[in-house]
Image (cartoon, rainbow, N blue to C red; front, side, top):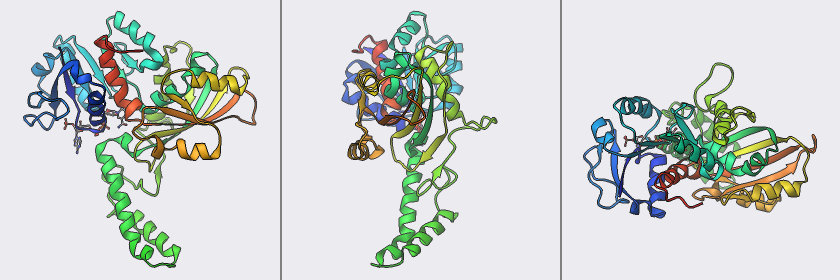
Length: 373
Ligand code: NAP
């Protein structure tokens, strides 16, 4: 059985990855070795029975023994370790959730339901770095791949509503702590039946402005608020998260030479899990809505079209409804009054599943020649 080193399994993406690998029987196909930058020597996680103790993720010699490494440890780790491994002659497959290598000439961004031919070409060409895409980009592509594949899209704006878990395990904890602190502050006013709502509001506002509200991770309140900037400031008014849309989507689709522009504002909101996006799609030509719906719904096994009706939208198109599910619903689909080529749509996807862990575990299967269509 092929040996696979797994790094970053304790984090948000890594935990979901292990859960999915167990659910799909991936551990029956490989012999896992677990690595950590902080937990070397402890017992391996229970999901993979029989694995030896956790090894040091900075031990290059131990890493080099693995023909396949999967990392969900983070960008700094990739930056520190990957070049040294390659420089030392390691020619194994590197599967990674971090963004560090996505734009590298020697890497391919993986999202097999959308770009399996691109992945197959990369493998034939000897590419050995298989990198998961940005969560928001991957989820958007799964939702609108039918229109992209048909060559119908002129441009897209994507206004995002990204969850706390997109920032990792520590941020999720802080978000829940913030919610708890706000409730504790408002509890006395809430307890007074028929009490003033302004008292409740004042208590929440005061807690939001207090230095005592936990904010070490996000820097500012997320609970009862939002943060209109994700990732680094590129200095041109754009955040790095916003830059990723055009750059990564076209790499995934293999359309870098004739890119489809995808632009928008990325916003962190108080959702626990699942990224949502409001899309405006400019088509190259006016097409009937029934044809558009057919193209979207028929593209892959995970996209699901939600009727553009109130009940279906509020019940099926929210982070609460979609969390923990592999399907990527898209709804609120209609022509805008601006013109027949302008569509609007709203899509939600679990960014820890198809946005992160799922492409990684499927890439492992792809490299083992065990990926079904
Ligand atoms: P994370 O939750 O912060 O975990 C990363 C690593 O931090 C863990 O594997 C662990 O490594 C260490 N860690 C330190 N304290 C921890 C704690 N209290 N609990 C758990 N782990 C702790 O990061 P992540 O969200 O999984 O992201 C990993 C990579 O995937 C990043 O490059 C990120 O950009 C990318 N990504 C994330 C998402 C997402 O939705 N979160 C989506 C797509 C891609 P050690 O065992 O070595 O200590």
